[in-house]
Length: 453
Ligand code: UGA
Figure 1 (spheres, rainbow, N blue to C red):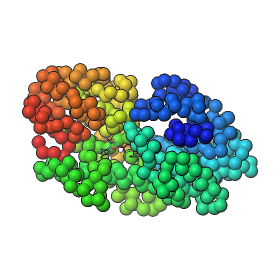
Figure 2 (tube, rainbow, N blue to C red; figure 1 turned 180 degrees about the vertical axis):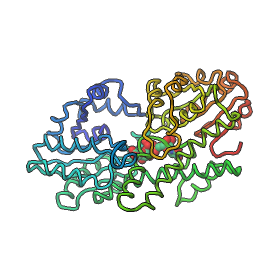
Figure 3 (cartoon, protein in one colour; figure 1 turned 45 degrees about the horizontal axis):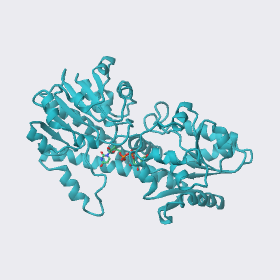
Figure 4 (cartoon, rainbow, N blue to C red; figure 1 turned 180 degrees about the horizontal axis):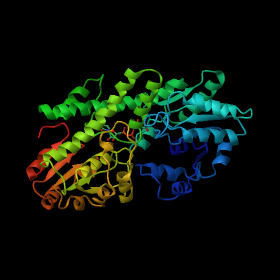
């Protein structure tokens, strides 16, 4: 919304939320999320044509176009628990819109939703509308965290799905005109509603599948002496495959990939397509396997026990340049190490101690996740300390695990770290960010993902 406000000075954008502290944060100098470049954009537009308010009903009543960007988490109970998307927030937003609307409106699905959600939303809106006309559009978001501003400024594509009626086409055109302020016309794709809804889930499934494919190869590389970076480079040179998104890692995380694939799996099952469901489920299974493989590697190389040993964890966010920890592989890895009675010292430049403790204490909903099933007792979480300094975290440690690819981890003084650690000193690079050869020269025993020792 900030980017729309920036690029369309004549459009007034009101961002509304029922959470007063959150809106207060958006109106302050300390924005509630860390996203490179966002501060500048918000500062330029705020109180010009970008407003943050808790007066939801007033702004919804006044708006011509309403973007609904509410949370759509995985259902934790009831029908489809563990897989289906929970549309509670979406449904209540739709009911509220119907209640307060006094003029015709375009309602845009911005949240990632299961295919066919627009049909349900249409029903809620039209059955409660008192004669007011609503057009539902699907306009999924493809930005990635950490690069959100660049992704929004120059998107690969903007996707708009709508009804193929004259009113539907008019609504699609209206939204297209908003984006056309800065996005070249050939990058604005228009489709029917269901294609737009499904394309979002499909894109995330394809992206996650690439990571699981290269991560599966990384296991084979470790077993054979091949080097996964060389394999990825050679494979990615084929222009039909492409070089992006082929970095082997400790596993993918984030609020989107797992949730969206689980949702896709559920939709396939509901449509009587168990083979298709199983195909996509495998992407998640490989991801879980990659996380537990990493834990096993740490434990087995440290003489089959980490009990009572100090392990430094560098990086907790699910990727660099964000403070977001949702579904971060670090949670599973830390829980795995705690399960083996390690004592962990964590450093992440953007994640607070509070957040880390909450993440590690949380009992995640288990879908088919072997690592999640290991219960973490309250005492185990006490084995966790959080520091604001990588050197402090590594001091006296037997091993260091790098779990997020923060640039600063490439530039650390590893001689200093080595000198302060127990010997033999291990480094487990879950993101392949350090120069393993150099570290070996210092004296470290280094394990990288998918690389020879
Ligand atoms: C993802 C998609 O990339 C966006 O296009 C999409 O809009 C977004 O989900 C969403 O649905 O909202 P995001 O989760 O923010 O974006 O971050 P990604 O850059 O996709 O990274 C996801 C995870 O995959 C991270 O843990 C990252 O470290 C990991 N990853 C990524 C790898 O392990 N290897 C890679 O080569 C790339």
